[in-house]
Length: 288
Image 1 (cartoon, rainbow, N blue to C red):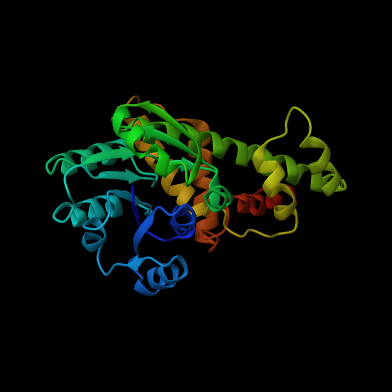
Image 2: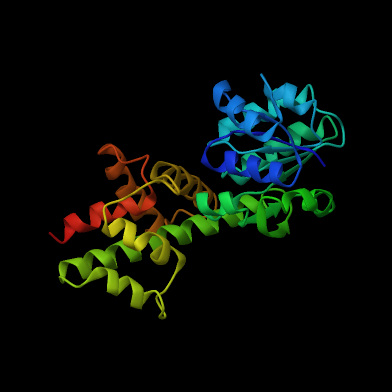
């Protein structure tokens, strides 16, 4: 299968490069045409002027955009040009309802849709080691799996359309809790005037060790917050989680609500484009 990638942000650009590395990239499209052209030149593929142009050239289309409305916009844009039998993969983080809408739109032209949100951050996208959680037709996943192995190290079929996005919601809630725990604990350690590099080293090897502590602990202590995963995007994802929860119960999940409040404060201060570890900024002020 020859892939086309729509959306060349931090994640999509690395996915495109990994497809190209495995000789599976046909074309790319991005709203900022110069970004698409630069990547296309580097990978020796076509930079398309429209999403529809890309859809007419590829039998596997990967969408990687930021928001629900963007996913549906791209799905509607490619609908008129896409060939029957094509598979559309959405790696964005959106609601399960949006995934179902996208599937419905594309089913009208006999095109398969899989919701395939990913986890692993920019590092995972760059290294081709993303975790991919898949909702949709399992047979269609198997058709696409060989190509998707170019961008993901672990691809797991979850269930019907929307299941991938629901699983990603689990991931995002868990990430919020880990972020809260790690940033708060490190702010406490710093307030205790401990040698924090040593603290991170030893705690990372014990029962409290986790990916976030190992990969973000020392950078946040150095006040470096380059975005592996932008805080504003995690806020968006948790807002989706809240909507999904509201569809089940009138109760709220405390971790989701607390993190939304904290992220909003940081966004109001201009830190929305920083990595989610920027929560450490807020935790430090509590203990000053």
